[in-house]
Image (cartoon, rainbow, N blue to C red; front, side, top):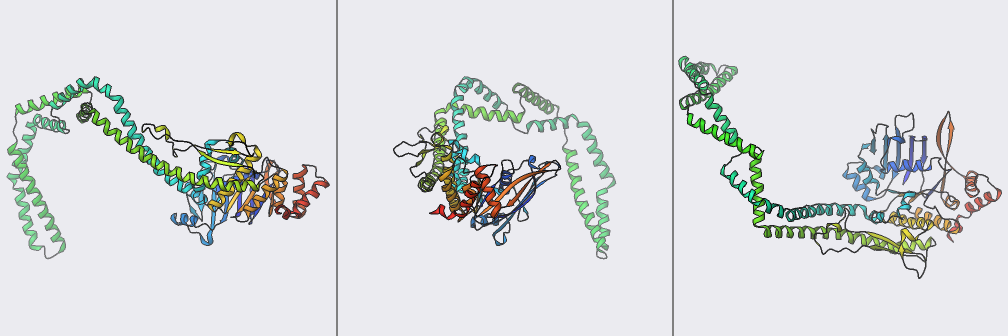
Length: 565
């Protein structure tokens, strides 16, 4: 549950602190006073994305901090995985938002990502907005409603399915490429065979060009190389430099035991001697073996000219020509063995299609299981909400899985399309909910869904933003009863304009706004006794509070228990 929230510099909210209690809390106030802003602030704590325009004008940042208590072991598991301590099952969540989007999220003083925050709070609370009720009008949102009952498991299954779908689409794409390219390849077959033969006649090696260029440069600079090698050799032999280094090391050897520095010097001389001796030997070999061969130089240059001509013809480098050779060889092989190649690819597509279909059906089975639960339990709740004649069914689309080339049966989240079918009158056929339910019925159906979702996920907090829209009279009483029933196990916070709902709640907060020094600010106050009577009376009669509305308000507050007879 949410026990405390602090909101600073958040739109028209300058500084508000609220302590929430168990049970049901109603939020009332005139339109635009800031009720929804408070819910938006709670939404930020639960992982909603922040926008910089919510920072109060003239402020450098907005801050929202909330304290939650929980008893869900799944939240504990998530916190442990993230390395977050949660003493006494308490969460302190803090969001800081700046105009430059330099935002900070902290859970129990540890910085987390928005994704991490959403994972934690998905097991903690749910916010119903007026937009949620509108979602019942749009069948495209129904899968998301169903998936919400087992969100984590559905997401894990969907991730595996999407990997399978990616592989299937890749295999199918290759099959279509082969089928479409075969005619083009046939037209180019003679050319490719000629090119293949021509490239192979060059007997290319990937580093040959670089090696030839080095050899040509060496032969073209023969005189310079020869002169330098001979002079270096003569100089070393005439001065006996290497032998002198060896003799010097022998003198150092005589004193190497006296001091460690002499021993180190000896080691360096010995190391240098053997290295230089080896280098001199190599120098001597190079000088002795050096030979100028004009015929070899002509051959190298001719080969380089030949390679240059090939590169110009194909407009590719030697490595690229070798890659092209591999490609056309494969293409020729595909043409020569087309039936075998295409059959192999067909089998590959069939396999990946079946794997993808199987993983999709696992998701479907879980959704069908959830839907059966919804169908049975929702009708029980709707009966309490004066929709006892209702018949409700979740209808899944039929999938034709006979065509392994039909990728259109696969969506990003599976193969399912669903519709909610409803009738509220005995003997009338079920019709699509989006076309058959009234506004008041939509509100009660969504309340039913939220009730089920709260129980299924073990949420400790649920927030309703005017879920009672479109109901009045006795039905409003039943809606109020259902909210209190939910509040027996889950903390409920609701924005309402219905006096029956406001009067039945355990706690009542009023949000108002005022203007001071040209600035609008929102305020919040918990109502008791006379103040609460007056607020409910205003909800009944409007701006002009009458004696009758006051008496009705008192009656509603004095007779809460009568709603449960």
